[in-house]
Image (cartoon, rainbow, N blue to C red):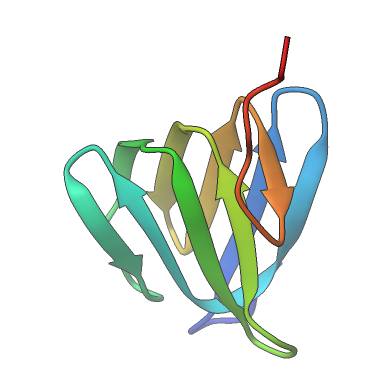
Length: 97
């Protein structure tokens, strides 16, 4: 659990865990535009657009997660991101079938 003044962030894909940890800030693009989440943000549920999510962890370097869409939920300093496909470090490309 994250300390007060921090976000507890969890990123999951449909078939695997992607990343979790304490963070100072999360940025993402929703269907309504770019959103930045800081501790104390009001509750929100949004639909993600394909692109990159940026997480600024409490310690360590910024984490970039490529997603192909999904849902973004914020409640009580807990951020949950659920995507069909997600990958740390870059964009998600469709299967080449």
